Every structure is written in structure tokens, then in C-alpha cells.
Image (cartoon, rainbow, N blue to C red):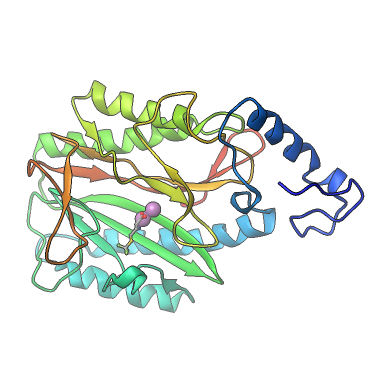
Length: 290
Ligand code: MF3
Ligand code: CO
Ligand code: CO
């Protein structure tokens, strides 16, 4: 990290002197780095203005998932969900981040039953009674990205799948409870993984969360299988997602050969995921996507 004079303007753009702005934070981070910990660089620490922008984007993302909840049900195609997300995002002044992202063809991901994530909406895919489906939306509003997803139960769902959906949400919440400044992302990961395993489930290793806000996928990669005390230090101003993929059976997954997006469980058993965008605050966390 570049050294800045005490009286020089802070790197964050606040216009304040460095010594009354980010200097103390930088020094504390530097001490952790010297102890051998992984620490965020400045690009991962958002200013209050940036967090307000992500909050505004998040409000829209949440409103979209609320609207999905009102229209989803047996007989609805995943294309109808895509149409709603696309049109509503634009009406709210935003852009769906998923559309054309790395060639992704639609505005939202719809992942049913054994689809772990990145399911592509299609008019040929009709939701049926008993399905569980993850709808994952990401909004860009005034340049700020908000990323969140929910599970929806379609009609009557059997108890086994309902338990998976509930425990996946609890995993996300257990992780969230560990988010505080000067803890480690691994503390959060272990809380997630322990809860999944205690319930007989597994957590996907290869696909995790990410920093978010100024871009769709920023550093750091956020694992949900890492151990407490490892991974990156959490620092006020960091914004990232908590989005563990919880599988009923094996944690092994594979990507569809044809569309190169859809991720399936290797054993064909169901998977569930809830996603939130979270900011690390001075004394804990703020969920931006609630
Ligand atoms: N929204 C997903 C996430 O949580 C990413 C989807 S990428 C897409 O990170 F291209 F498939 F949309
Ligand atoms: Co995400
Ligand atoms: Co997402």
C-alpha cells in the first residue's frame, strides 16, 4: 500500500485529511498483514457514499425478488420470471447485470431442484408442483451492483426438500452472524459449513461468493468451506455476498456441456441457495439486500 502523508487528502476521495479519515484503519490493517494474515486492499473498502449507492441498488433488487414471489407458481415458465425481472429492473431505472455477462443470455438465473446455480430461463421450462427454485437477480443502478437470491417452493413441496430450503437459509444466517470487523471470512465460512454438515448436507467448494458493489464479481472470492481464522480479514467498508450452495447429497457438481452455464449436482439430488449482499460496518454488519 502506498504511504500517504498525514495531512494529505485521504485516498478514499472524502476530501478529509488522511489522518482523520482512513489512516487509523490502514495502520490496523497493516499490523494484521505483518502478522501474516490476508488483508483487503483499498479497492475492496467502500466509502459511505458508495455503500449508499449499493443500498439504493439493493432496494431495487429486493423489490424485484418480492415481485417474483407474487407471480411464481405451478405452470409458470422460467422465461416469464426472466421477463418480469428484465422489465421491472428497467422500470426501476436499473440494468440486469446478468444479461450478456460473460455471454449469459438472460437477465436472471433460475435454478430448479438439482440445478445448483446459473440455470438459464427458458419458455420450455415450466415450474411444477413440488419444485424448489432459486431465483438469483443482480441489479446495476447508477453504476452500483446489488446481488441477491431466494428460494421459492412451488405448491406443495415434500418435507425433505423443505428442510433443505430452510437449512440453506439458516446456513446463510449463521454465516452472517459471524460478520464483524477484525474477524476472518473463514470464521463465517466455518459457521456455514458446520451447520450444513450438522444437518447431513454438504456445501459446494468450487463456487462461492464474492466482493460486489462497483462490479459484479470483485475480489475476494468468498469460500463457505474454509476454516475459522483463515481467509481474508473483514474490515469496515468491505461489501460481499453470502451465498452458500447447500446440497442434500454430495458436494460434487458439474457444468452442462451444451450451454456451459447450468451447474448440476453430480448425484442428481437437490441443492438450495440463499444470497445476500452484506457490508461490514464499524461494529458488525449491515445486510443491504433486506
Ligand atoms: N448472480 C450470480 C452470483 O451470485 C452470478 C450469475 S452470473 C450469470 O454471483 F451470468 F449467470 F448471471
Ligand atoms: Co453473487
Ligand atoms: Co447472485
